[in-house]
Each structure stands twice: as C-alpha cells, then as structure tokens.
Length: 256
Image (cartoon, rainbow, N blue to C red; front, side, top):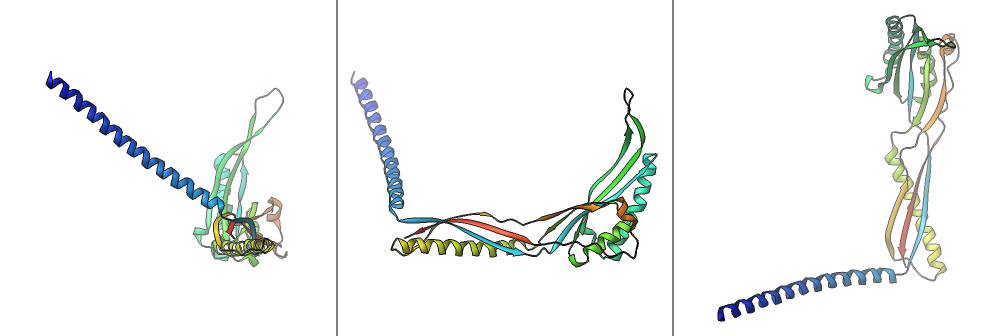
C-alpha cells in the first residue's frame, strides 16, 4: 500500500511541474505579445504625415527593335521555302555587311511554311499554294540611319516590317534619376504640411515605391510588299523615335 501511495504522489508531482512549465511558456508568450502591442501603440502615437511623390523625366530613345522579314508564295511548299531563303539571304547581307549589325543583335522570331486555301460554298477547301515566312527582330542603335536601313532591307527583299519598338538600354540609370525627383517631391510636400501644422520633420519612417520600368514606344507597321519596289534613288524613309517618359511614384511617411 505504501508503494501505491508513493506512486500516486509522484504522478501528482509530475503534473504540477508540467503545469508550472506550461504556465511559464504562456507567460513568455503573453509578455511577447504585450511588448509587441506596446510597440504598435508607440508607433501609433507618433505624429506622422504620409504623402505621394512623383518623379518624371523625358528621354530620347537610344535603341530600336525592328521586326522584319520575308514572305514568299509558290505552288509547292519547297518552292516557297527556297524562294524565301534566297530573298532572306539578300536581306541578311544588307544587315551584316552593309550596316555592320552584329549577329547577336538579329534574333529569329518566326519561321513557317503554310498552305493557302480557297473556299467555295458546299465544297471542301482547296490548296492553292504555299506561303513561307521568315521573321527576325533586329536590335539597332544608330537611330539616325534607321530609315535608310528600312529602305535597304525592303529593296533587298524584306516585304514584312511588322513593328518598330523604341526603347532605352539605360533604363536603370533613368529610373534612379526619376526616383530622386519623386523623393524630392515627396519631401517638399511633407515640409509644407509640417509647416502648416507648426512642426518640423524628424525623418522618414516608411517608403513605398511604384512605377518605373524600362519605357517603350511602338510604331505601327508601314512596310508592305509594294515598298520593296521603291526606286533606289528615292529618299530614305523618315522614322521619328520621339521621346520616352520614365515615371516613378513613391509614398513616404514622415515623422514630425
């Protein structure tokens, strides 16, 4: 009997110790949560002002991405492909030899040979021939000569110029400049509000930035099969890259 009582007492002691440890853990959790709540209350008690700042700079594009290519049609798929290859070789010669474009700046974006069909009511579609198409995207940086390049590839056989995309290869540099203007704009606004409240700004508590990214501008396609028939003496096509705008927005919280 004594042995049984001792076991019961020991078990009870273990339960008391376990409860003590559990209460200790709960106390730590409670203290942590209390400290966090106190910190949040302290932050809430701070006198702050939040403003939006805008920064914008206007830049001139320094690179163009031109999607161009050759489209040919023939009675058979192999004839269409051979005709396309011959015309495209002449276009490549203009790009690489006449204009000195690096091969890494010419990227194939599409190549296909497809049947052409004629459709008549109550009849199955009939194949009337085949169209071969080879498209590339050319990265070109000498924008003053872009019009001449377009004319040259058209005369060589390029009868597809789908679009021209103007952009910049200094996007990060311009983004930082716009960001500085946005922060200056936010600070100026905050100072006006602080002055109105009869206080001085102490510092920045929070910043959230949005916008920016590398700007791009597009020009619609203007080269067709007819353009390839231009007379060699005709003046170069006029292509105006225009301007690009880099915009950055910031939301800044200042402490009074």
